[in-house]
Length: 246
Image 1 (tube, rainbow, N blue to C red):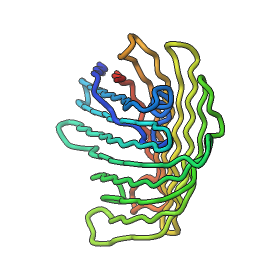
Image 2 (image 1 turned 90 degrees about the vertical axis):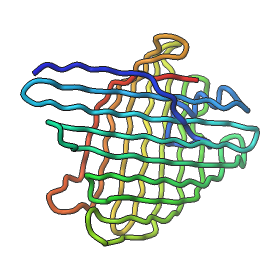
Image 3 (image 1 turned 180 degrees about the vertical axis):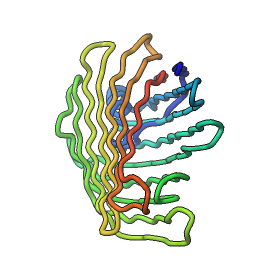
């Protein structure tokens, strides 16, 4: 089997508040107060041979840090085909705003919508409020935590069954700059409810090629505690993308 990897840059949107949705963009926003910053990435994997497959992934994020208020939003997608048959189709949108209580703590409100044609849930809407704390906030290293109550609206795939419930939302965002060109980040999201607990962890290594362009290798793990029969609880996605910072 012959494998080629093709990546191209795309704009991206990151957190409004010190959001754990994207630690890398949040760190950039913190370094440029009162200015909108963003990053975007796009990757395409094409396999030819015994099996023909194409997988396209991308994301868009934007962040802003003001004197008191912080805002952010983002979107991402995944699309895959194998032997001309669609086998992956997922897209997500999130937005968040927060207000500082002190140099390290803040209150926040967030929403997230995810639609997946090949998962147990056709869609999930979540809305939450919470408290955030910047445990580490230096020029090289950022570590923050968020926790708070929320509510989730979801629908099972291909059936008219809705599961709505209160949840506890928790996030952790870590970013570390090794040097001018190399950084690592890890973003963890947990939405825990009595019916289902959703966990997503994104680990990424980013290496700059120019001031605006970079290569990024990442591993995303997604886990649901309650799934339909014949559906796996855990999905893992490994990507190598081109990133554009603006």
